Image: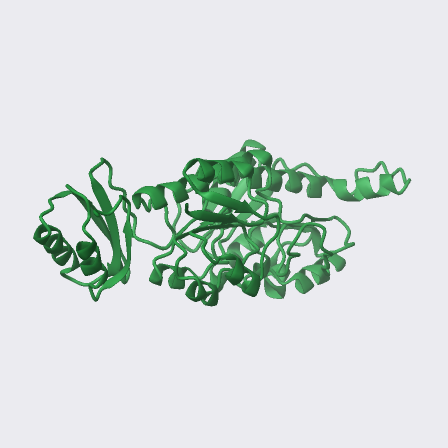
Length: 402
């Protein structure tokens, strides 16, 4: 029976789907460090994680039997994708499932910051009645600058405009503007024109340190700042300085450079205790609806891949989906050089089998071919396929011939 290990309190629907597909499933609430993860992966075919577990090259090299990794979140920078691809380990994530949850939280925080609701709440809890309009504003008519116009940024754009906000955005790639949103030619232009700036960038290494003292200084005085993307993108010392100076009127931060590993662990940050600053424990996508959808979506991808070889929406392998059924199916991940598919088909023919269906896709240095054949797969055919000098990983999806 294949085994699946799910870490970081993944929604139970994932275990249900994997269990129904024949997996023996083990679930754990917390993340694991490198040594513990390596040990825990002994005999595991499928690993499920969220954002805190780091799947390093060392882990992958130590556990070559691992078939697939499911990132039950949007980001995949916690996984060494290149090493995983080179080892034939498919990686899947959930690029859309929690988009709405993040967008709703960003909108809520923009309103809370503009109305200074955090400060009013703290004062009232402390027994002080502070009924005043000082520093409190509507968001209607104000300018929102969105850095990163992907799935989250573009949806936020639409809903913010529905509230009456003017929307600007900046992205490294040319993106279609939705509604009346206007693209900016540079990050500097966006900062100088916006009254609220919100970050929705991805986890690529080039975004580390994207936002620091220089960027905060360029923002308009008494503007608002949000980061619901990646913790390493923002210099928190610089943010603290600009909040205390009054240049930044308020901030909301959901992600941090270093985050506690497990529920209840202590949390430290230079942003604690600042006025009109909302700190949340990386919960932008943590709604019951989003987590259920993520669990169902990623578990479905893992089941499809391990059952049929389908790699639709894999973040590190060529995309292949072969529909239909046959007596047997195998998938060969190989180095992307000319002639591999011809040799595969020749071997199939030499063993008296017909190719009933076949799909090949390439991605960089890798090629991935899924092949349906007309009869059971002989052991010597499989040995010959594995012995191809370009072969990286051979996977069989039907019972071998005896």
